[in-house]
Length: 129
Image (cartoon, rainbow, N blue to C red):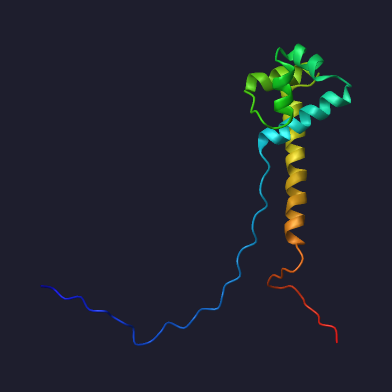
């Protein structure tokens, strides 16, 4: 019968200094949410109802509402139909979405960097007496 021995190290490894954790990356917004906000903005700028825009795009007002709220992810054909119904091109819509995404990421990044109570290497701290 084989015996098992418990092995204990003679010396413990020195505890390493805690390395600073990398800053968490801001969470990227979902494409469907950014698309929905942009489509709603375009529709409202033209002072149109859901029904009017949906009719021109060939979809139901309920489905358009879900797209605008970021609940549904429309197909590329549906996005093209909505862009046409709103008087824009798919290229222009994509460029607007790119700008929206960049602005959102920039704001999220700034919010992460300026979180109170967090310091990073290189930060200068001062104590008042």
